Amino acid sequence: MVKCTHSNDREIPDSSSILLHNNPELQGCAYYFTSHGGRIRDLPSYDITKTKPDIHDCCKSFPEAAKSGTTYLFLWFDPLHGHCYGFHIITTSEGRKDPFASAFLYMETPPNEVFYDFSCQFEEYALNRELMFWRGCRFYHDIFHGFSHKCPFVYMSRRVPSLDVGINSEICEQFNSYIQKIKYSARSMNQSHFMFYLQFFIHRWNVQKRYKCVAEQAMAESLLK
Image (tube, rainbow, N blue to C red; front, side, top):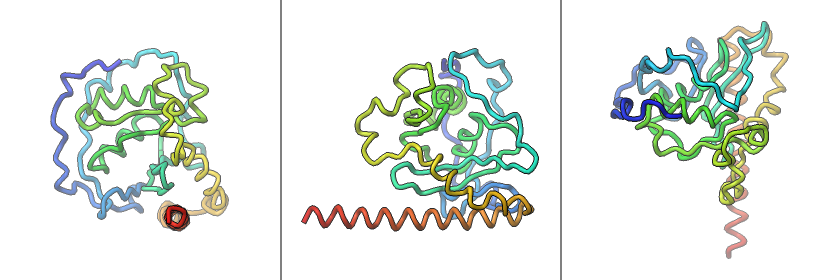
């Protein structure tokens, strides 16, 4: 349930000034929603974060912390054309704070739709903290994880026919398979080398997706002639 709708009904903090310049090597974070890649807001402290969360039928098990020799990443993708907008290293446990904080700190405006494997509780988390920022966003489970949830059908992306056309809600799983090629070599790297290495392979991924998108667009245009 959204508990504090009216108390959080405040203006979105100004994004005109860069609070922290982009330094992936130091920060363990690289997002490129903007041309400069830096933070555009500060993250406030929320009173609701200190309260005990409600018990829900839906639950998701997160690793308590990254295992030795293993790095967990949170990444943002466009499910329409597959472009990766960046990532951050998860140093503790994954949770709703990861999509919330990364979007609020680095995006000028949130996307119209978010596909996340825990969207039912992510929506509550986001609206209870920054209602004005997230108010125009719709939250859906990706198709694969949606079958395991007990929450209302409203979060199922497959219920909306238009989302089945050209939307790839499993793009994260596909990227995970792609990035396995650097799994073993990355284990011997320090953070500086790892950040460069990972960004290089994300760039290659984006180039491939861009070429594919251009080719599909050219084919569609040729069929219309």
